[in-house]
Image (cartoon, helix red, strand yellow):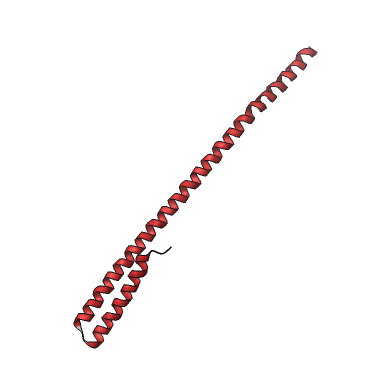
Length: 109
């Protein structure tokens, strides 16, 4: 979304250019000077609006990055929890198979 300072600044800048040009054509030094001043103010306001837009955009990017990092951390935590519940079962199964194999070896001796 474009900041309103950018819109009004651009409009003032354009109006100042027109007023300055009209003042130059008519030979009115005060209109020319006032137009140049309005053009400068409009340019400054436009730059201010652009800076506000840039800060808003950067804040949105940081917020999105933080949200993604949080979601990824939550996903890793869930996967770790799921794996930790799988490992005891696997460990018990391996231990049982080793015990069964040792039992078969001992019984044949």
